[in-house]
Image (cartoon, rainbow, N blue to C red; front, top):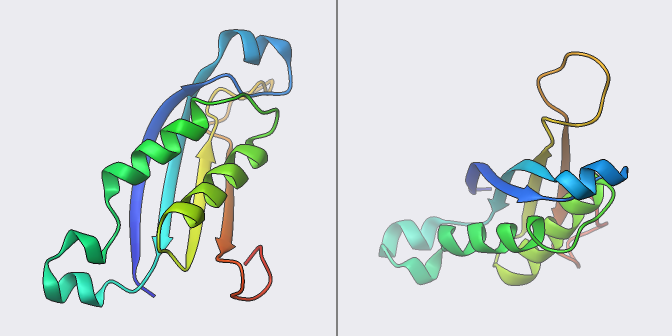
Amino acid sequence: MDRILISGMQFFGRHGVNEREAEQGQVFGVDAELFLDLREAGRSDDLRRTVDYAAVFREVRAVVEGPAVRLVETLAERIAGRLLDRFPADAVTVRVHKPRAPIPGTFADVCVEIHRRRAGDGPRGG
């Protein structure tokens, strides 16, 4: 299956389990992969046969900058659902990065990755 990957998107959000995270907020990174057949887009050179990358960016931004949630897993789930609802992808993989997670110690990043398929294409959850 072909894929469109938009990686390294960054948005400010107030997501987290503790109050301090909600008050101060932080930058979250998001990678989104949309799986779909891109042959017609490649043959026709027609944007209507693919996914508008700017529209994907706007949808992800709306979720991350929208209402706060406690878990990064919830954030990833909401992004995946929104992308499947609004774009003709058969499946999506979403990675949400939280580089400033409140963990005592040195680490580069915390990331949650989920893969979801369009309803009707087998069990949800990939």
